[in-house]
Length: 203
Image (cartoon, rainbow, N blue to C red; front, side):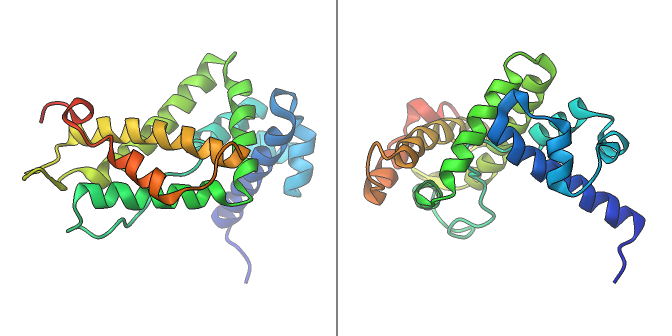
């Protein structure tokens, strides 16, 4: 079945973004447009047509980036699960992602992206926006959950999401690097230890 023009355009955009991830993961800020286009099976002309040039493609790649490992989860124990149960499930999922052999490539890509954006204010701003959006997605899983007889507010959920993401990213990095074992009980208990009044803050 032939793709429509819009479908073909979307497929080419996705192919170029995925290729950019791989080449940037390998070469960092020295990534060449020609290498990206070749990996995607397209021409550099397609990059200019779809993104306006290399900078546009890099911006789209950064917009597509969600952090060292994707913490988002569409389901985490169901709507009736308590806050501590949801946090525990996210910790388990993150541990599984960290222990996956593919996680090393994700960590390397994160390092390359930081190299790319640190000297580019526009890309740095885009990266911050992208990462913040994943924190909002994570916070949405916590909002309204029961904790200590009350429902978690949006502000409390966002503070917990930021703290949990930072904590799990650090623990996960240790697993990826082989600095410590993938201990599920430790991941879960450490994550749940963040559910305190000091972290949640006022309602």
